[in-house]
Length: 95
Image 1 (tube, rainbow, N blue to C red):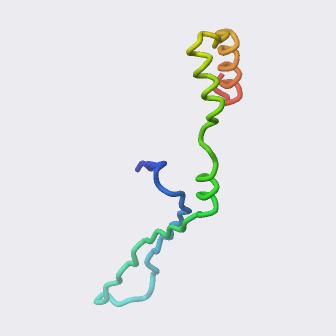
Image 2 (cartoon, rainbow, N blue to C red; image 1 turned 180 degrees about the vertical axis):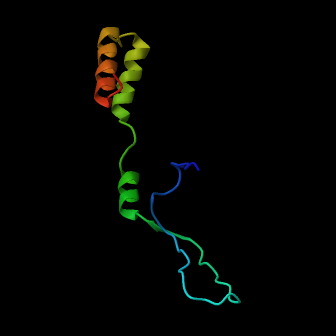
Image 3 (cartoon, one colour; image 1 turned 180 degrees about the horizontal axis):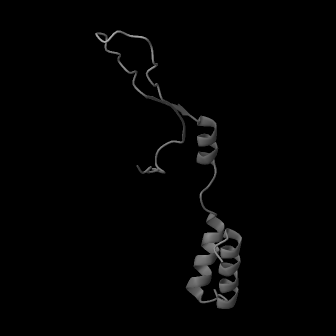
């Protein structure tokens, strides 16, 4: 069973309760109905409103980078990038 997360949906807190039939001394003529499982969703409006008010990007920094790329002044150091990748992998325990 897989769980798919849709980032477009509002954040919710999920709790799942499983209702298992209880064993009891019933006669063979009686059929017990098992209660259905239930799922309760409650909105986490506080978190959702904070996320809505926080900008997802730094617009000023994006403009600076676009301008630097456009005028050719943006440069990268491939050794620095490689070191940062290695450092990140070590922190994650991959290397």
